[in-house]
Length: 553
Image (cartoon, rainbow, N blue to C red; front, side, top):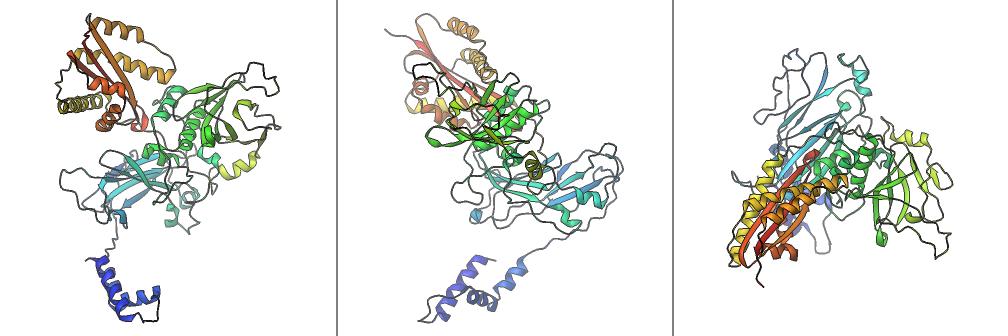
């Protein structure tokens, strides 16, 4: 049934038949009455299918970890090993409605690449992900998620929670919908906190859409075995993509801070999202860390992270690049001829700093970062918000607080396989590009292999700020390039795995284009790709193009 077509026809007839010459327009009530008279509303109601489930199964007694399973044939709960002495929530997602931007999208053919929707869930330290489904006006989700409702008190882990205890659990189910296009680019479509306790008692309100205090976006976060050092954590945050957050549902750009789950599932976010995550990780490593809110050059709003050492050292961490800067304040009272430290950081002004326990406003005569003194205990320079006030709005259970942060997930990317795939794709793209220019291409595998240590050295330097291994790389290249030949190399770094997109970017560099389009005698080309994986399937992709050719004087 073409509902939209029927509605348009009936509205057109109504306007022609009922609009009087002296009447400017019909009211909404007139149009609705016309739809009811012609039976269109009844027809729509008949087309709707309402699903009801009656699940009556025996549950085995052996306990098992929380599981996620998908059932595309039936909406009934499949048998699984769960503990009958524990409480569980079974959440079913039975499709979607009204994704109108995909109204005219045809169904994909078998084997055809298409954009997909993926639903991500987080509930009390448990994370789940649905199977990707093709984007459509009514996406065909049919997924079941078994969520364990456990008690947190010691000794209560195996006791069944009663209804009163379950009602006292204020954690909602956080649902995030991600769209992935055919180029593997992700977009945040929606984020929603589902209040599940309404099935147990009267609903007490919805936390979704409430303006939250900034302190609630930061909490100590431990990475387990996934990240070993604070600087490695900074590198992980740095390789997550940067993108200004659009208004969900369309429209222009505006200030919007994402929850941690939405940021991680989308794999990219704004500078505030990066700063909040980095601050949380540094707090997890036992550092005294704060998010700083201020501006960069030309008054552009920005957020970064600051740590305060026990010896008074103040270090700025740029979450978008992984760079670290020591802060040495200048003395504005010094005479102009006195030598002052020149700041290397890009920050200009700072208005406030905060973490999960503290919010401090800058009340110094100047908000210029280079002249600020970061003695946070001096209330004449930094005005603190009452700790009790911060706790009242950020403590667990507060209406404006966020639920416990989700754990980080290990990478699902095979670094070796992915590196090889991208490298083979780049070889093909280079060969095709040179063929279009009337050039032949000869690859030298040994020269390609010799580029690996350089790529490893570049990533090691980004992670540790220490340069190592460059001498061995240069010595190997000298031995591989005969006398009378010239070697040229071009390294570049990406945070995505799209070979065609990376190649297009490389060609915009005149240095790289000179290598790829090299002409001469005995030209040999080389390319090496090295993918370094991080949690949440984030990755740093290093590519080096190189060539050697006989020099002609």
